[in-house]
Amino acid sequence: MTTGNEEQALNIQGLSFGYTKAHEVIKDLSLSVGFGKITGLIGPNGSGKSTLIRLAGDLLKPRAGEVSICGAPSNTKEAKNQSILLASNDYLPEFLTGLEYLRFIHHMYGMECDVHEVQRLFSRYQMEHRWDDLMEDYSHGMRKKVQLIAALLVSRPLTMIDETPNGIDIEALINFEIDIRNMARKNHGVLLCTHDFSMLERIADFIVLMSHGEILVHEESQALVQAHGSIDAFVKAQLS
Image (cartoon, one colour):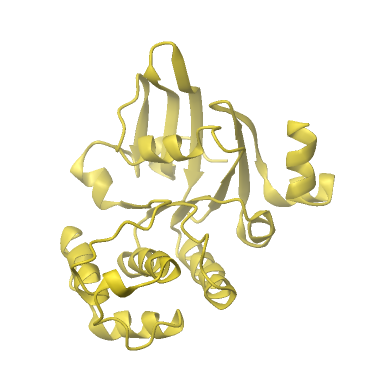
């Protein structure tokens, strides 16, 4: 693992958060995601995974601790420009077409939208000719695909994904695995929260297991597979 904020896409130190003083959801947590690495974030429901990602994306304010993205504090414009967060829900502006939404995302990052690239990715993710349709007519899976396409198009140094691939079809999931690996090969950091352990065995460099707001294990994924046979077996052994 890397050391020093300048070497990391995401650096979290001593992070604590609670919705009330009596109930801490995140407890003095430290974590780093290196450039060129895919880190899988796993754990039982309610373990704090989504809260951690929201804290990293500056959507929640910690009680204590620091978060930096590419060396910049997470609440700065510089950090926000270097990262993208894909939420677990599929809430998208229904009054926009897919293309209009992606143009808006590009505008937020000060980028020009390549319409041909949008069309290519829509076709790649089995949504050919749907880019001009209102998103109110998109299925749950299609909205998830649009979120993933947005991340691929803006291609930030840090991409944080909170269970977004859940609900997409198998062909799209295969393409997502290929595309996210290619993103990491371009020296981008990826924090991927998912319950799809088999996918993490194929693409993740590191696994972070959370429980009750704390990190139980942060280890190379292949080392865990070699020791336990699978990530599923590893999780069962840790949480039993």
